[in-house]
Amino acid sequence: MDFMTDQDVQKYKQDGYVVLDGLLTPQECDELKQRMAEIVDRMDVPDHCRTTFSTYHDEQLKKQGNADYFITSGDKIRFFFEKGVFDDKGEFIVPKQQSLNKVGHALHAYEALYKKVTHSPKVQGIAKKLGLVNPVILQSMYIFKQPGIGGEVTPHQDATFLYTEPLGRVMGLWIALEDATVNNGCLWFIPGSQSSGISRRMVRTPKGSFPLTDFIGREPTYDEDKFVAVPVKKGGVVLIHGEVVHRSAENTSEDSRHVYTFHIMEALDTLWSPDNWLQPTEELPFPPLYTK
Image 1 (cartoon, rainbow, N blue to C red):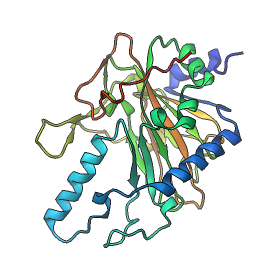
Image 2 (spheres, helix red, strand yellow):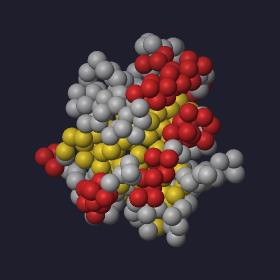
Image 3 (cartoon, rainbow, N blue to C red):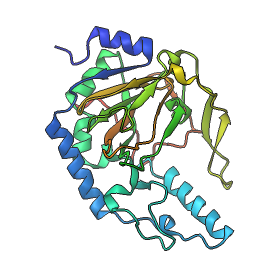
């Protein structure tokens, strides 16, 4: 029996998202969390994160360091922190394990447990059920949504950052490693909003200029009443169309909301924009999802 039903396919095409329960077992979720705890224990905090603000020049250097670190992270495992977790000497003021916003963007390539989940028979089955012929993996992230400080993610469309011609070739898989609830910052969607194209794009700026990325177009103001909360049980996955509008609120609860998420693209007859921040490299071309 297929993990994804015809009804699920219909809902995904109609609403731009669908929740599938039970992609991972509770034990598999805990193994991914445990492995991430080990990665965080061993991490070296990048120097630009510890830069102290003493002059305007220092602040600009820190911003440039952050930007370089981000834009070259597509084929690496790197660490991105919540605001306010370092003091003015660059030391942690919260426990290390609670300091991170996310880790990205190549867990799927370099970490065995994450690679196994990304290429699992269930995930490959989802792609086949949706008719994908040559899906490739673009990026992956572990998102922490820390208790009390996990920041808001404002309304956006993934294709703003992961642009293709034609549109409609990118899908996110968002796997809850803990229950995602309205209290701890679950996703909210505008059902059907994937059918209106995209309102803005994030693009690389010309070489030698700063900032390294810029936006073309503007995110409109969305009617709050149109958003629908989408809680997910531990081990469940949300399939996210690249153009559906979604957001998540800040986490003001005492519970974290750990997630493993990755994006795939149908590579057949698709142009990946050379202006996207994320680019395949010699070290890591976008790997095929389908493995034997």
